[in-house]
Amino acid sequence: MTDFSALLATLSRHEVAFIVVGGAAAIAHGSARLTQDLEIVYERSAANLDKLVSALADNQPYLRGVPRGLPFSWSRVTLAAGLNFILVTSLGDVDLLGEIPGGGGYGDLLPGAIELHIFERRCHCLSLAQLIRSKRAAGRPKDFEALAELESIDEEGGD
Amino acid sequence: MDEWQRSSLHDVVQAYKSGIDRTLIRENLRLTVEERFQKAMALARFAEELRRAGREARQSKS
Image 1 (spheres, each protein chain N blue to C red):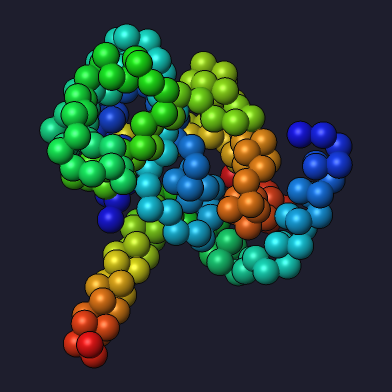
Image 2: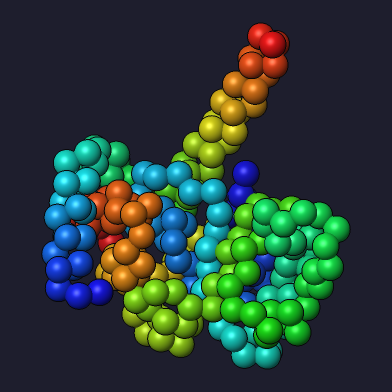
């Protein structure tokens, strides 16, 4: 089970620049759907990659669904060479995304994001409008029901 | 996404809306953000426990 509290705490403690997106963002806005992972869009500067590496280093990050024992180095070089990393850690499943459909990267999303005060920390999260826009842009069948729920939250006056 | 796709997506999402339980949404909107996460984690723990019990039951049957 993913420990959202511990993951957000470690990312905040290491001052990682990130925005909560996906199912966890939907929960923040009132979704009743279960989500198994924490999805974040992270800022891609070298300094922030270093912070991200430090934040998760003690939590055995590894590629999710990939057989154990393959060469995977948790480092700034690895993060800089890719964009999206679907990880399993000792705190649970984490998706590190360089950008999302309909929203772009960290710098594109930040101006419209909201600030959450949660577990005695502050972190950024997609606004409900951004979340709906990204789900619409993704257009994946698996998101249709989630999109219907998010629009229903909006109609119910969700924040 | 072209106009036809946008229109189709809209229709599909509208169809899904009829199955959304708005009482759950209203209940969640009354909670703080932190309480929403606590509730989600409690549900995940419950789901994990159900999976474990299901596995155990299947193993003892076979």
